[in-house]
Amino acid sequence: MANLLPPAAKENLRRDRATRLASFGAVALLAAGGLALLALTPSYIVLKMQESQGTNAIATQTPEIVAAKSDLARAQSVVTQIAPLATSTVFLDALNEVLENRPRGMSLDTISYAKAANGGKGQIVVAGTSAGREAINTYRIALEKDARFDAVSVPVSALAGAQDGHFTITLTGSF
Image (cartoon, rainbow, N blue to C red; front, side, top):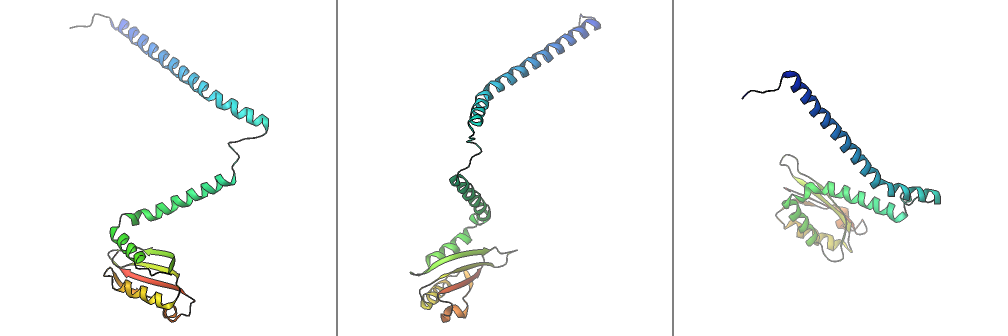
C-alpha cells in the first residue's frame, strides 16, 4: 500500500504533531508547577507567621531532641559495627557461653571481639569486677571446660587479688 500524501504534506503533518506534543508537554509542566505551588503555599504561610512572631519551631531544638539524635547516631554506629557479628552463629554461641558461665556477684563491664583473620583464631576479651578472686577463678575454670575456647588466660594479679576485684579474661578460639 502506498502513501498518498506528497512529501511536503507529510512534513507539515509531522511538524503539526511535534508542535502539539511540545505544547501539551509545556501545559502539563505548567500544571505540575501550579500544583506544587499550591501544595507548598500553606507551609510557606506557616513559616512566615512563625517568623513574624519571632519563634521558629523547626529550627528550635530542645535538649531532649538533641539527646535523642545523639542516641540514635550512637545506636546506628553500634548496629553498623555489630552487623558482621550477627551473622556468625559460632561467635554468638561463644558469647552466650561467656555470659551464661558468669558467677553471681560478678559484673562484666566490657566485652571486645577481634575477628579471626584468614582462618586464624578469634579473640574475646572480657573485663569486669568480681566480689573476690575465687569467683574469677571459678569463672576461668568454667570457661576452660568449654571446647569452643582454645585458651583462657587471666592475669596472675587478678587471681592473686591485687586488682581489687577487677579482672580481664582473654578467650582465644575459632570463632
